[in-house]
Image (cartoon, rainbow, N blue to C red; front, side):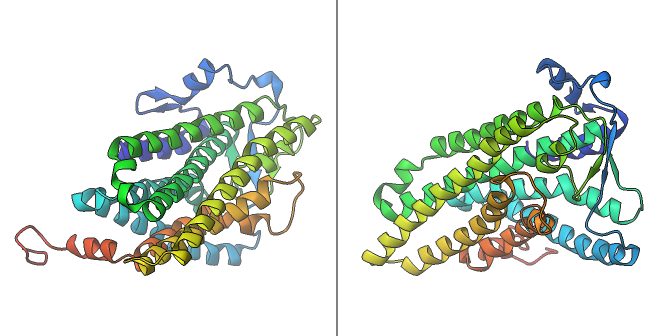
Length: 350
């Protein structure tokens, strides 16, 4: 299922520019038509957007291409390694934290595929353009995966809360059925959030400038190009994306505050491991939520640091997550080493 979704995301982003909407038998255009969201040509004179990117210097773009190519390879290999490790070792699937970690790595892997390949392509050409449909596809997948990750991190905080504050009933409370429903709820929540973003953007008329001041399409930059008063739309965007980030971030901080208080007042076996796990989770949470709150929970005016914050939750965080979650985790490191050993017990080749 996960590989199919990656294929869907990749083909969608590659095919939208020329009207090729068929993705593994499901038409994205048909989905929009069902929702009544097909953009009429007479509503807009803009058929494509120009991405200003990170730099206009050709020499600097070549350097950035090599740098972000290295980052992208690290993202793919690191997150894919975690997904394969969790799937290959059944004993790692029993603790819910590893089940959630596998989904988190898959989301990070998919999220990087939404923006980084297009950015790498643009580094090697002077004209950086993206079709209107391709821009909508980026917005959809970016918010679908981003919101799903926020919900999943909130679920992971709840998982740590139950494990530390109620350890005797941990496996009873966090049973496989509940974990499955929680993960499904995260994906459904991300889907609803992203559809709301697309609905608000697709109704705007674009008839003038088409330069997006970023290396990918996102709501704050795109709605600034609409040839109408977008005050109400901006308020709705802030209420949607901004409040979502703030509420999830607040819940996470509250959960980890309770966990830290519990660890400080109760001494038990494995306390250092629990502190290490919470520290890694808080690091990931900060890298994701602080940039999102900064970008979405304010009026849509441009700042010079916007692109830097965008890099954090689209490139830097997906690259660092595998390191943060594995370097301090003995079980994960042991399981990864076992991937190189066949059932006969000898290192490959057997």
